[in-house]
Amino acid sequence: MITEIAQIEVKPGSEADFEAAVGKARDAFGRAKGFHGLELHRSIERPQRYRLMVKWDTLENHTVDFRGSDNFTEWRGLVGGFFASPPEVEHTETVVKT
Image (cartoon, rainbow, N blue to C red; front, side, top):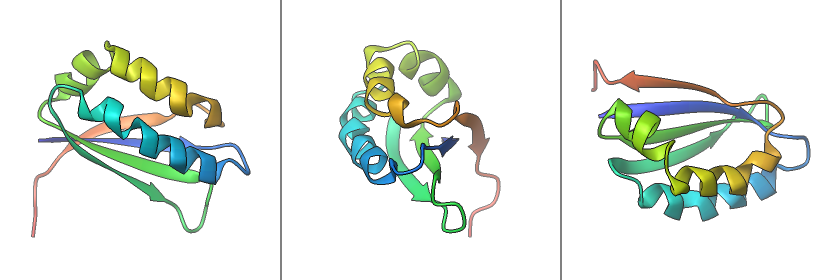
């Protein structure tokens, strides 16, 4: 299982609309091959900063299958206008779990 972590900075004043758009985008992710769920976290110290965490079967499910699909286009169409800067994305794998 791979976790995609995207740090997203949104434009001031757009936080509520961005959160609603991510909720609407859930279906776009849900149709994607290898998708296992997502969580959106908002920073307390920096309320315009979010971390989107998405679970995938494989790295390629995100980088190839999702990013090359109409689902990704739908996702970006819903949320892209709220970005203050391009998201920073990395992928992790669990090495210790308690």
